[in-house]
Amino acid sequence: MSPPVVSVSRVSKHFDSVMAVDDISFDVRSQSTTALLGGNGAGKTTTLSMLLGLLLPTSGSISIFDTDMLRDRYRVLPRVNFSSPYVDLPRRLTVRENLTVYARLYGIIDIAGRLKALGEDLQIGRFFNRPYGQLSAGEKTRVVLAKALLNEPELMLLDEPTASLDPDTADYVRGMLEAYRKRTGTTILLASHNMSEVERLCDDVIMLRTGKVVDRGTPAQLLTRYGRQNMEEVFIDIARERKLDRVLGDQQVVKK
Amino acid sequence: MSLMAHDHTGFIPSLRRIYALVLRHTYLLRSSGPRILELMYWPTVQMILWGFITMFLINHSSWIAQASGVLLSAVLLWDVLFRGQLGVSLVFMEEMWSRNLGHLFVSPLRPFELGCALLTMSLIRTLIGVGGAALIAIPLFHFSIFDLGLPLLAFFVNLLVMGWSIGLLVSGVVLRYGLGAESFAWIAIFAVQPISGVYYPIATLPEWLQYIAAILPSSHVFEGMRAVLFDHVFRGDLLLHAALLNVVFLTAGFLSFLRFFKIARVRGQLLHVGE
Image (cartoon, rainbow over all chains, first blue to last red):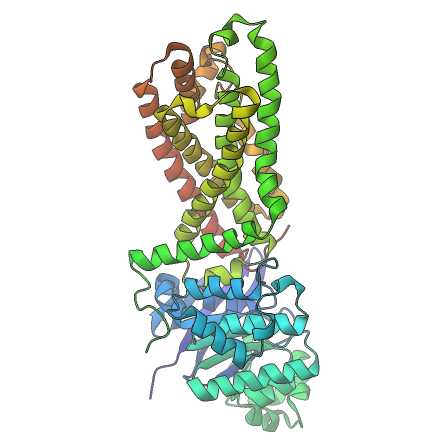
């Protein structure tokens, strides 16, 4: 069995007196799509930031592709990419200029060919010459996704990839991610509030609450465990700490 | 065939990433005429102001009459220092304003490479801004700073490097304390202006301030400039002092920037950039 792509061991992060992430451990299997779920302030973005090295954990270790991210992140970063609503691209640069800059940062050899392919895949070719800041939210999301796919990453970390998108665009993005994973076998770790997205895309779910991992399983396992019809109800149960007795009695629960 | 160049840790890919970031800011610069005009605006206004002051003082001051270009040279060289610092700080803040730091730092770009790109952009911006003003001074006041000859290059390089050093420090401070500290970028350099002897000899300062002036590369440069203009000699000793001090300044600038970057990673400021 291949080693996990991501291995998080006893990671904590506190900001002064606030414990944002509290002693979490989990692995992400190769070629899986794993969701980090939790309410606002549960620690999803903090966890993703630590995985990427944008944020240093207070304690614990993080390994990606069997490489210590706290020591050797620059060996890993060319194989990884990410998107997040908390970061943006330069608004005055055109889409082509933005993607060209990042293509060079990632050392893409055939930049024109790669941009052409992404333009077709994500249907963004027609606004390549428009400033990024003039695009609609849906168009921007596709451009950011193109940036996240530039280096054909083996691991994608996506923070709320369909946040603030209309249902049609969100569906398009999900379809794109599904197709990309199927074609390349990439591993995806995403943070989301959208439960239908999680049910559609993910084969593994890690539930966070107040910085702790409180449950984990496939969407089907979680639905059975909580006796619910959909992931939204499971999410609410966990967020509101309902059915805690049943949860704590389950062997598959990660106790912290 | 691999999509990417293989070596991501060697020297050549590092140059490629620096170039990528320089390209990003060149795109920005070339797309906006007002930005280029703005670069030239203040150096030109300063040059015109001091040009007229010089014309007046030539007839009223024996000191100025001995070297009519001393004030204009000082103004233009001071702007090299100021624009050099501002070039680094503003280009860095451009990344913060566009909330782009998160994307940059999950790419293979290293903080040191970002620093090198900032310095390159600062050089380009300074050449446009001060170079433009220097060229306008030729027909306007029949004054060419290029008459300083090779010493001009030595002065330019030393002042630019000192500006870079302060710019790196300022960028680190803004990263650490957020965009609320951005006014620091505009005012920091003026703390060293009075003791740099831009418009008067260092001997004018009180003795205790002269000791402080001695640790600034800029004070040696401006003393050297006056030696060329008044005495027609190039003081190699002053240049050497300035260069050695600049090695210390630039090292300190980079180290402080890297230190503030580390603090930003501890405090989570790369993702949540703002006020």
